[in-house]
Length: 123
Image 1 (tube, rainbow, N blue to C red):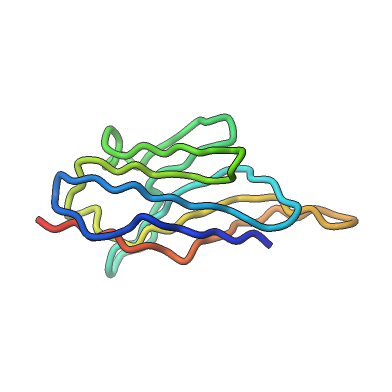
Image 2 (image 1 turned 60 degrees about the vertical axis):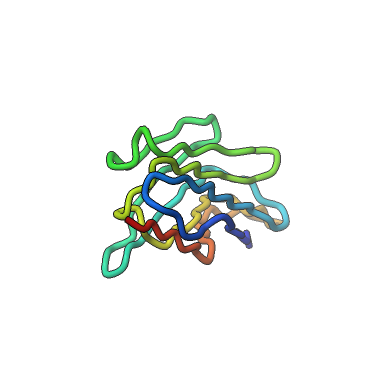
């Protein structure tokens, strides 16, 4: 199993910045990709940004140019730098990791989720 621990959410005024962090831990695993999803009140969960092991990143159109996803492979940690935040960015942000866990006789690739961190942007 892989555990994801998020930090960095909070309340910020429009135009402000926040940085989210998510650290993955557990025995005998390797990360395939990591991402940040978000879910606003009454809305479906959506992908905000994702990054592959080679550093290739992709973003939801509405956050391009404002959000930057990065990762530290040695620390199994992913970051989301959010600048020029807007009220519509208000949501619970969830860290996601696709990881391979190695057991004695087999390996299993699965998706893992963090507990979520609230980001609130006031106008």
